[in-house]
Amino acid sequence: MERTVFRISGPDRIDFLQNLVTNDVKRLDHGLVWAALLTPQGKYLADFFLVPDGDEALLLDVATPLAADLAKRLKMYKLRAKVELEETELTVTRGTGPAPDGAWPDPRDPAMGWRAYNGAPGDDTDWDALRVAHVVPESGVELVPGESYPLELGFERLHGVDFRKGCYVGQEVTARMKHKTELKKGLVRVSIDGAAPVGAQIMAGEKQVGTLYTQSGGAALAWLRFDRAGDDMQAEGARLSWDAQKP
Image 1 (tube, helix red, strand yellow):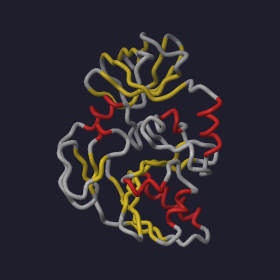
Image 2 (cartoon, helix red, strand yellow):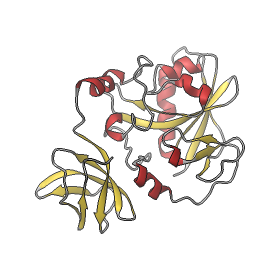
Image 3 (cartoon, helix red, strand yellow):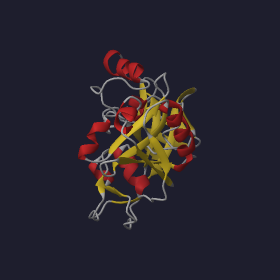
């Protein structure tokens, strides 16, 4: 999926983002930060990478279909903060082989390789296979604005949320889900025999138990209701099973 890169500058840029997004922006001192913007009710709106860019700015790397709405929301929250947001012409490349100069490790999982913003060539990694193997959701596929909560999408396991950083939009709901409830649904890897369209309903008998997403090599990502899922599910002719002991 195409990416759009914004540059965020101004003396208030760190505090501005720190009060909005799920992760600790101060971790930029150590590399990329993967974070999300949520609704006030705690549901996912957009995820993005924050990227160090010298002493006076940072970059925001987001899936292009989400870019316009994200920029609009950031400008809405800006109020009197001394922050400037501008779209750049930078491109995003990535790979899993030796990292070129200037590349950054993907903070979600070491298996996801590196990301670069300096025109370095990427490689031909099968990203869908890698995402399925490591249960890493993709913007606009498994990650759909307004539909799920970040903890159901793996944000804690993939280092996309910080529970010590303080308040941000949607923080109260996210913290409550972490500390006071047990997740009853979420994104997992399932075994699949056959194929079905992304977005197909997963059924167990007459009950809808989830939604099927990316598929690769006999496995797939699926959003499931854990109390209804098991080893005998179907999605438009494909047969699925889920081992609750695995991600």
